[in-house]
Image 1: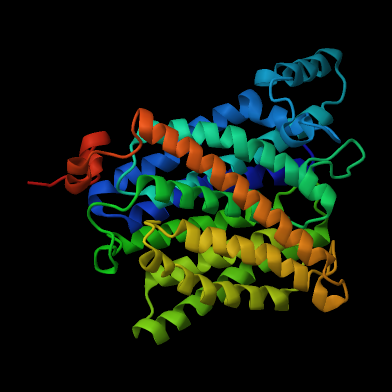
Image 2: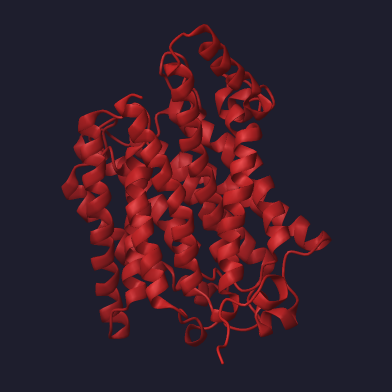
Amino acid sequence: MTTDLAWQLLCTALVIFMTPGLAFFYGGLVKSKSVVSMMMLSFGSLGLITLLWVLYGFSGIGTISESGFTNFFGNPFQDFGLTGAFGDLVKEFDDGTAVEDSTNFFGGLAFGGSFAIITVALISGSIADRAKFWPWLLFAGIWATVVYFPGQAWVWALNADGDYIGWIGKWGALDWAGGTIVHQAAGAAALALALVLGQRKVGFSKEETAAHNVPLVLIGTAILWFGWFGFNTGVPGTTQGQTTLIFLNTLIAPAAGLIGWIIVEKFKDGKSTAVGAASGVVAGLVAITPACAHIAPIWAIVLGLLVGVVCCLAVELKWKLGFDDTLDVVGIHLVAGFIGCAYLGFFAQVGGTGLFFGGGFDQLIKQVGSSVAVIAFAFIVAYVVGLAIEKTIGFRAKEEDEVAGIDLAIHEPGYQEVG
């Protein structure tokens, strides 16, 4: 096993661990009577999206073409179930030839799948306390198929020469690890589902949204931050110098995000909260995801502080505008993801040149244009699919189940009385 492959497999394990971390993070934020339901939305995504990625998701990114219809969607059924790829691996074993190409292929496949899993799981935070489990899985499968699987190819697909062939990458928009197709796409889909399902019957007020288990939120945050080092540094082909810069920026930006958020909280509410600190960390992580390989550490600090401040204010919009984004997926992932991508239009120094370093407006136009396109596509698909599910089999739990707590109606209680 090569060192590069070993590192990629380790990073894959770290990213997969992020989804249980997200389950802890989300689970601690909701009411005690819906914690199991909330966590199951993440674990359900872990199961379903893994299977869909292996069956046809990866084939789509692997078959994207230089132009035409398949430049946008590829051919997901060209190697359904990876039977062809597995046949190549078996042939290499039988012939006694080197298996480096095939083993690297399967390693990259697993790494890409871990991204797909966490992206879909992120969306579930906007529909906490009121979404049914099986309709969620139906939505997750359709949205991943139509939006995420081809979208990942738009950003990262390469030809045999190592040149970008997806329209976003080919255009020259910078997105190292998923500011567009992971965070902005998930945030846009979260907004769509929040609008489709509407406000909670109980709990849509500042006074009723306190986290039921703050330590669980902090544990989830720690796991997410830990896993994010794999998320950002595991990209295939990363040089040693890039890896160290990415690692450092992945440490810096969330730290700055934490400080930015709790400072705003202190001025706004008179105190800084642990949940606010955790939210600031996540905002910083989201923002640095597209930018980690492209900016100097000093600008990572500025970016983290910026999104900590902006996202702390942005999460308040749901109260003013009336959309029930329960766990602030929109205010954190959509907003911080957009800022992180747009920021490169000003501050990019590696892989592209931002406006403030003599690059003109070209990079900024590409950053904003690709972001707007992904947001619009992800939102429209999510809204149409979510509405269709709600109008047919029903996406939202019954009112009495929401009031009593959907854990008991859909799964089982998270906490049992003793004695």
